[in-house]
Length: 272
Length: 183
Image (cartoon, rainbow over all chains, first blue to last red; front, top):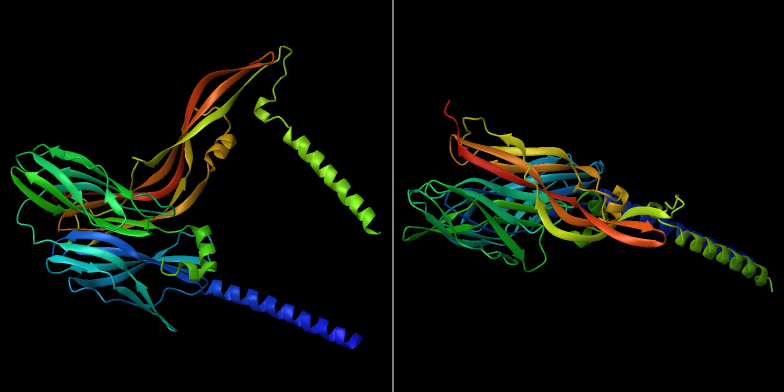
């Protein structure tokens, strides 16, 4: 009877040790090999053929592995063509276990028309695996090449990035190069969950500039990545014209503390 | 019944804990504990209200990268990628302590940290000058503080003072484009 008790206690101790080391060692390995991508972009881009658009996605890693890989863009719609991929390494995190790289995907607009990029992905080939990172959903509105003179945007806010979300705000300084007044009728884009709020038309006197701020409201929870290049609709005399504004890139990238938690629960944030 | 002595000890410890808690709870906040003069006079400031005012785009831009003054080549990129020390902050007429202000707004109003400002802009045509700046976006709060005077057992509300607290949130990137200067 006593021998049997000792045997049960011994087996119990071994089981406890097994679960302890098994669980904690595996968690540690998961963390060290952990990585996540912030890549699902939502957006609208107006532009002209042959113009270039850059999409930024974020590749975050924990541990000693590096960012060496073969990168390629796949499954683009016919209105777009890949202009290459480049990688910028971040040195911003104080904790050396976390590294971040921004991947810039360059797209070239092709023929005029509307198209939606929704199945494109970035293929990342490393030594042991191949990863497909979805690029999200972006509507492209490619205009016929510009005929002649148009309004000029002399300064603008080109983007916003940080650890905390904020509703995007578009700001442009617009010069009227015409010898008659111009009326800005509207600024439009088509992005699910975002809309322009309370836009009022504005007049620009000949050869003068105005500062135009476009307030946006979100009707759904904000995403992590947006690209917005709206259309400006304006009237010169009796003629109504449109032109693409400048591109606005929005990114919410978690800070170090949040990343530590996210990397520990990678399955919950994959493809966020 | 060996549990009785143990129960008595636990009960005793519990009573000591409750008494210590009561003593602590009745402690007078430091800013009010000034009844030093014989006339019973003291004064203090308290935060009366905190109002969230929305996002604040700091108009103070810092230049980060640019083409040469005579402009760049079409397709070139002007790349801004730099670590920046950013911080929460406050301005205005602060009357309560910095710690009290931090507690009321829910963040450390003096905390600073490092973040990378990263953005790039393309040169659209030969000879175009492009300059990229970075600037800060904050959440902005208005904090109203009120002055109180205590005289001989009566407390009187006095004037108010306003201080603004800014919680750093993210960068924004203004871009300037124009024709480059002719060499």
